[in-house]
Amino acid sequence: MSIYQLQSWVSQFLKTFLSNYGISDSLLSRIETGHRSLINDCQVDFYGTKLATCSSDRLVKIYDIKSDGQFMVEAELNDHQGPVWECSWAHPMFGNMLATCSYDKKVIIWKCKERKWSKFTEFACHDASVNSVCWAPHEYGMILAFCSADGTATVMANIDQSWKQSKILNAHKRGCNAISWCPVAFSFSLFEQKASHASMRFVTGGCDNLVKIWNLNSDNQWELEISLEGHEDWVRDVAWSPIVNSNVHKIASCSQDFTFIIWECNDLDKKMWIKKFQWRFDNVAWHVSWSPSGTKVAVSVSNQELTIWEENLEKRWICIYDSKKKSGASGDKTK
Image 1 (spheres, rainbow, N blue to C red):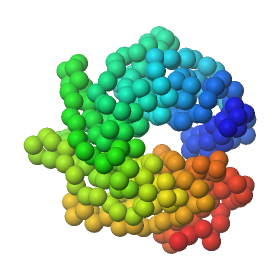
Image 2 (image 1 turned 135 degrees about the vertical axis):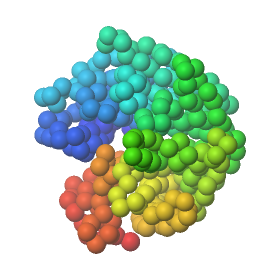
Image 3 (image 1 turned 60 degrees about the vertical axis):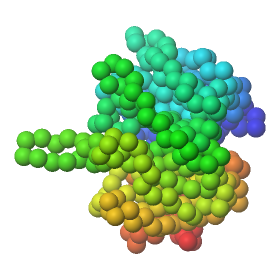
Image 4 (image 1 turned 90 degrees about the horizontal axis):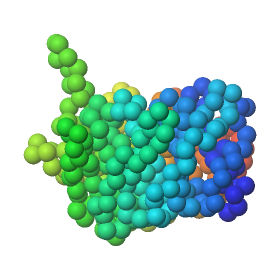
C-alpha cells in the first residue's frame, strides 16, 4: 500500500470519526502523516483536539487538531523497536496520556507536560507481540489492559503511585488479538453514586476463534464468565459499546473468516448473550469501532473498505455507509 493510500485511509476514517464530535467532514482533506509504512491505528482523544497514529514504521505520532480542521504535528515518539499496533488515550482526569503496544513485546505509556511528550512508564511482561491495549473506564481509576500473541492478558492498576499487575494465563490458545472494557456500572445510595469494582468486565478476542468475557470476582481475581462461539477463524477485533441503553450491552467482533457480529445481552448476571446480527464481507474484517454515542459501529476490511452500521427503529442493523459504493443507507444490508 502506498503512502498516498495510507493518508487517504486516515483521512476517510477521520471524516467519519470526527463527525461524531460535530466537526464537519468538509474541513478535512488529506493528512500528510509522514509515516513510512502501514498505519495500524489512529485514535482521537476525549475532547477531539488531538490525534494519535501508530505505524509499522515503529513510530507514534501526535497531532493537534485545530478548529479550522488543520492538523499540526505535536510529537514523534520512537521508543518502540517494532511495529506499533494500537494506541489508546487515557481519560483527561489522568492528564495527557497515551498508551501504545507493539511487536517488540512492550506497552509504553506516554505523558505530555508543558507540550513535551516523554515516556511515563513501560511494561515488558509478555513473551510475544502485544497486540491490543485499552484503558479502563476512568471511574475505576488508572487501569490499563493489554493482551498478547503469547495467549495471555494483563491488567495493570496504578495504586498509590505504583503499578499492580494481574495476569490471565492461557486467555486464548495460540494468541490474543484484541481487548475492550465494559462500560462502568453504577451502584446508588442515598448519599453517593460510585462505580462498583465487582462489576468490572472486559472482552477479548483470539486465535481460538472465540470471543471471551472476563469479570473480576469477589476474590479480586479475573475469571472467565462466558465464551461466545460464532466465528470460524481468528477473531481480529472486539469492541464493547461505550453506552448501555435500556440495560442492553452490545459487543462488536470481527474475524479472519470475513464476518462481523454484534452480540447483545440484557442481563450480565444471567450471561444470556445472543448473536443479534452477522454480516459476511468479501475480505478479512480487521477492526470494529463504536461511535461515542454507541449508536453506530464502523468496520474496516482488508480491501480498504470502510462500512458504518446503525440499528434502525425496527431493531434491524443496516449499513448506512460503504466507502466502496460511496453510498448512504442501504436497507438491504441486513441479515
